[in-house]
Length: 307
Image 1 (cartoon, rainbow, N blue to C red):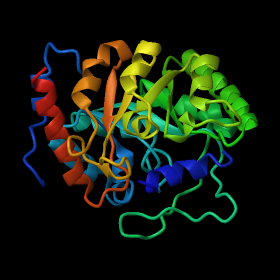
Image 2: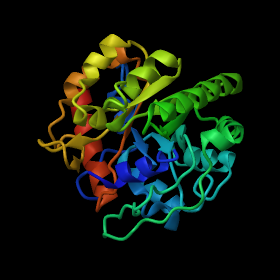
Image 3: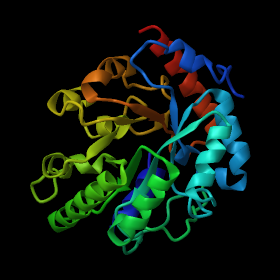
Image 4: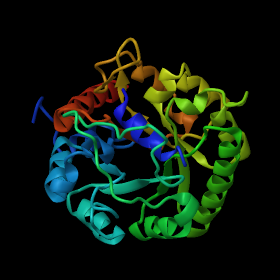
């Protein structure tokens, strides 16, 4: 369970297999229920999407996913496109662009660190990436131009309390800029935000010293020993976005949803308390992304249809 965590932590240093439902099946079975259509975080396809963006998106749409959260692209920008062009491509495929991930600070490997590897064991390569600390306004403007509902900070420096303080300043400024642009702003966690830094818990500071919303990565929170449902109770309405992935019993290996140890029925039962508006399936650097997202989609379809 290292690849995406390492990838985003280094950014913060300076910082069809199984049977798929049709495109309309998920929306149909959820009609009248409190759950939105299934979404997908495109980082799941990080190692292959840039080789064929339209082809990859068509495969995702064919599984049944209706909502998309974009992330980092080796082509730069929005998978080599302008915001409006990317949004239009998704719309033509029957999907909608709901949110976009950006970094909180410049990408820089810490001393002695090496790039994380992909599913084949090869070091990943990334283009220069803009970040909220240095490029906040253009990132906000582009997200608004593309019509997304939320801009999401994927990771930010928290190694020291001074890092946390600086990050909070950047996050608050971004939150205000997003409000002016007419979009939402949220923070995406890993497990490290829940561990003490000089006696303080960064995630608690983010909750109390900002007004931004949170995109709770349910698996990373669980790995850190946190109960997502309890977080929803403590901060109702603060979690409009979720990342949905599963973990093995030891919380070491990422698995497709429904193949691990996380009780997603219990978590989805608390969706109203959380204020959940969108959820995005994600699997960090899987060997077979399409097979993984199909398995997750089918499990969630059956689970939510029973509610």
